[in-house]
Amino acid sequence: MGIAADTYAELTRKMYEDWEKRFYPKQKELLEKASSGQLAIEQINRVGENMDSSLRAATQSNANNMARFGVDAKQDSNMASRQALSVAGAKNAVREHEKSALWQFSRVPTWACVKK
Image (tube, rainbow, N blue to C red; front, side, top):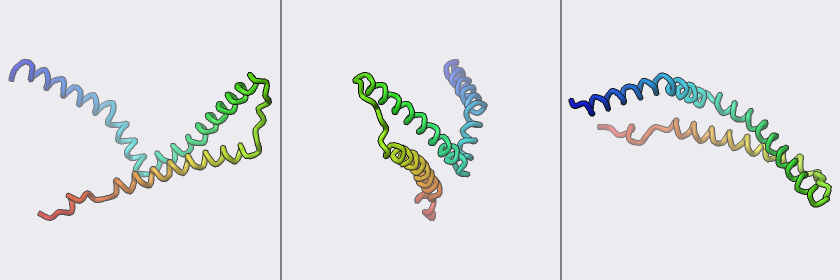
């Protein structure tokens, strides 16, 4: 073959070897975690921390904005329950996504059922 084809083939082989060394192990790990449910558990654990952090930052920002106008930013009694409800909703969204993803992967493609 020509020089360009040989160079292209060499680059393609190196790119594949790089993918195989660096990306494939992580991809395989994530696929195994996703199929076992471990990935969803990790995400659910992170949701609580992330939501608490975000809600704390939003509350502080609101208090700062209210203080600029000289208004005392009191939290109403429903704020804690709304925050708990938002955390529960986020965790349920992760669970629902995991169920739908597992359902999609567990289905047999229609072309596999066709007899030849």
